[in-house]
Length: 491
Image (tube, rainbow, N blue to C red):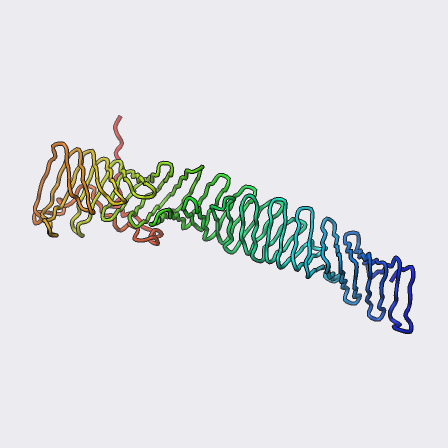
């Protein structure tokens, strides 16, 4: 006790109580306490202070309230009613505040509001340290920033660097999107975040979700970098991009993935699964472009394929396969220098093969129907192969079957400039060669290995993806099966 306008010493009733009124001032170590009136309990080294209560610690900490209990032996101040703690640019408002001078820690337990130069934080329970400028809030935590609102179960906040550390389920909502996380940190000044434990970032239109074990995210630029089990799902375009590393730019609508990279296109009943070393997507308006590089493997129930690189454009619904492309459709294998797949609402409509085209159908493990030419076009009706057209030095080997039987009648080899095959129920019903075809028929017993296959025949079935998981199986084309380099035309 330092000063009061009047002091009453209750000698008879309670000799250890001092009743003080008017401009009361106490000092404990370097801390000063002011009020209108107070009870000082000398034996307990404690006091009760009433009205216009103020605590001053140095020139940086001020606590205001209507009522105070101060326990000197514990260095504990219990401020109540209209409490305000000011620490430089930080102000804490509550009705129930306990301030522990030993730990330089103030904590509230029935609702509070912390305000600094940038943010406002509210919670049911919280604590604030004037020394470290750190706050920890729990239960119904809400951080309000001019650009976003963060709600959480538990939040740690640094009033110096304005970094909020997420320690429980949290949601960050802004005009640029929504973030869901249970652990991580968010710099409320720079809008940079590191998010852990399968956090989710939603785009501003909520059409795209980015999920990963770890995400580095810049809310201002909409750029998210993902590590481990990344999943980018576009629910409007019906496509999923996956990988163990990748990133997404919400402004340019560009996405990239590598390390077990995968694309899943699920707009139709049968989804298409694609794996490559690196995959990327770019969306401009209603159009989307997907690219895949190195070791491309595709699986869909009605279509499988492998190649070195692939490009898909939604504006013309065409998939381009480059460098040793191989396609399988039901019982057919198709190869060529370049293959184009034309889709109609994700349904197979046409396959164009340019240069050194070769198609074959397995009759059994020994005999194969074969077609060879410069260019080949396969037409589909309702997703089923209906016609094949071949042009340029066409050669074919066909094994006809006896009527209503399974026995092969022989080997029919034909050469002509053009060839057309009409197919129904996956069986040729009409074959046309034009003009002036050259044909040769050999009985099965007369066949030798050299006459059973066209030049360039290779069965690549060992490379064919068997199911959606098999796209991740690493396969290598046999050295003897690699197509010879294409001859350059002489000038």
